Structures are given as C-alpha cells and as structure tokens.
Length: 249
Ligand SMILES: [Zn+2]
Image 1 (cartoon, rainbow, N blue to C red):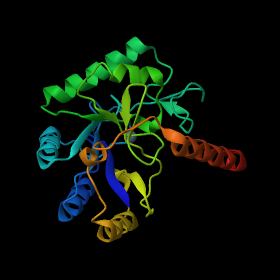
Image 2: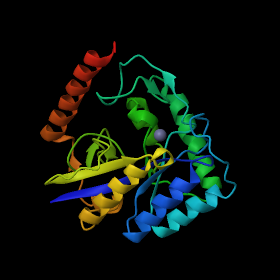
Image 3: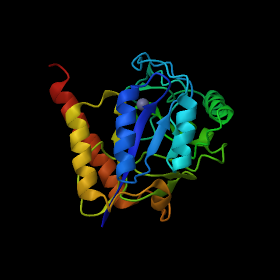
Image 4: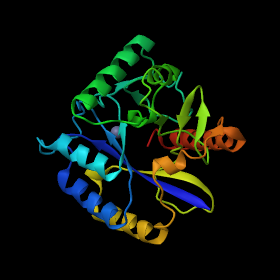
C-alpha cells in the first residue's frame, strides 16, 4: 500500500503568513505532521512578504507539534552552474551548493545549523533549494550527526547511499499510487485557491495513508535499487526531451 509524506518548502521570516497559517490549520485538522523546510537566513528576493518577528517562535511551535524540521539551504540564494556534476540526474541549472568546495559547503552547513540552534530549533533533515547539490553536499552533511536524512532522491522507499539516508521526493503531486512512499512538495507562500482545494481533497481521500518521516525511516533499504535507478533515469530522459522540445518557444 502507498504512503505519503507532506513537505512544506521555504519557511522563513518573510514567507506569506496568511497562506502558511491556512495550510497549518488544514494539516492540524487531519492530524498530519509534515516535513517543513526552514531557511536559516533567507536572502532569496522571491520571498518578500511581511517580516515576522515571531517567526522562530512559530517554528518552535511546529517542532512541539511533532513536525519534522529540515534545514533548507542556508540563504536560498542560487547561482548558475553548468548542469554537470550534480548528485542527481534531474536538477535545476541553479544551485546554492553544487560545484562549491567541500570546505565551503561544510562551513555553510555549520552556519545554518548554528542559526537554527541559536533559535532553539533542532533540524533532523536537510534538502537543497531546487533539488540541486553534489557529493560534497552529502559529505558535508555527514559531519553533523543531527542531520539524519535528506528529503530527496529516487526510489519507492527510504534508502541509504554514500552513508546518508534519503527519503525520496520524486514529484510534486499530490497523486495517488498503488504502492511506494512518496513525498509531496508544497510551496505554501505561492499556493492559489485551487491548490488548497486540491490538497484538501487529497488529504480527505488519503488521510489514512499519510505518514510522518519517522515512519518512513522505520524501513531503510540499502542503496537506491533497480526501481529507483530506472525512475531516476526515466524522469531525467522525459525532462530532457521536454526541455529540447520547448526551449526555443
Ligand atoms: Zn526552496
């Protein structure tokens, strides 16, 4: 039977608070504990709603409720990087991490974790902006034992690779599948009315299949496996064809 994890991206002081409050009420209604990606020190100009001075208090409330806190980058400020050397085949050409030296990435991780710790927030996971990172990102994260998993990767269950646990995040969704563990990613700040309706309908229809990360981590396979590899390659090929067809339009 399939299982679903809800992930909320881009929590920061200047997020769209009305939308975040709305999604929190909705998840509370169904007793769902999502993964929430917190940006330690946001410098992304796309997130420019009103500054919330009580933001960290809010994150601590989520933490108390049992939400899983993941560090989501450091500044969420990305630069162009040639599409080579990424950890995963499918990726953006913009990244906060890929291509940077191990020592720099380790310093960025340390800075992010320090900011979270100073605000009494304990991250147990990580995911990079735009799914873009490299092997040095994974190596740097392993220096911080509190980071138990990366919310990313291609497989139908949690898996261990290069000494790191991955809780797969294959597509945004939400879709229903007959089997597998799927993480569905939402960006509450930019969600429209129809997105909320679609999510609410999905939660109602799948409320018994939605799990938290701890549950997903109760079964970790060794390596991505054949299905994971096929998924990663298939999605990469489909995206590449789509890119070639539409790049000049
Ligand atoms: Zn993000």
